[in-house]
Amino acid sequence: MRARELATDYPTVSLDSDALDAARLLAAQKLPGVLVVDADGAPYAVLPASRLVKLLVPAYVVDDPALAAVIDEHHADRLCQALAGRSVADALPPEPHDRTKAPVADADDTALEVAALMARERSPLVAVVDSRDGDRLLGAITASRLLDRLLEVA
Image 1 (tube, rainbow, N blue to C red):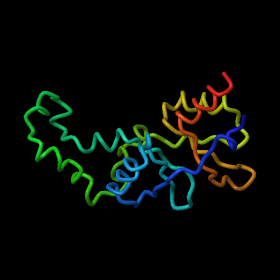
Image 2 (cartoon, helix red, strand yellow):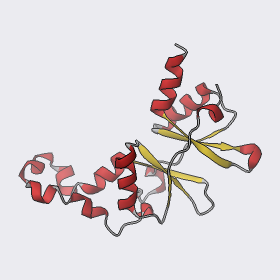
Image 3 (cartoon, rainbow, N blue to C red):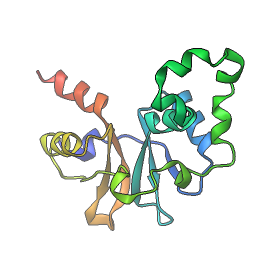
């Protein structure tokens, strides 16, 4: 089984896309993360849903989780306003070494190569490109899709 067979169409956002729109996309499609592409459409980073959730929670609550219990529901319901006016680039970690670089598999990579890449990079998805076609993005493979296909043959 090759990466091209496992890849499916997968939503992408650009660095200048609206972070709130990216959050809505993740929620509506129940995605583990979204693939961020650069201006040329090449895989740039993965924006995990957990990163957006972290941006919603005030830093003082992250530092002291007991404070979450004292925030009333009215204020908790408005947490997503923290993403208003921010771009996807703003939502990515500022330091390149903290950023989840988009793991990229070649279309001819095996399922085991994709699994190893996913495990090594600790990413919920892997972008798939066709190196024979100028690294054209074919789609992505999510961890759940990979597991599903591997379990079919188990």
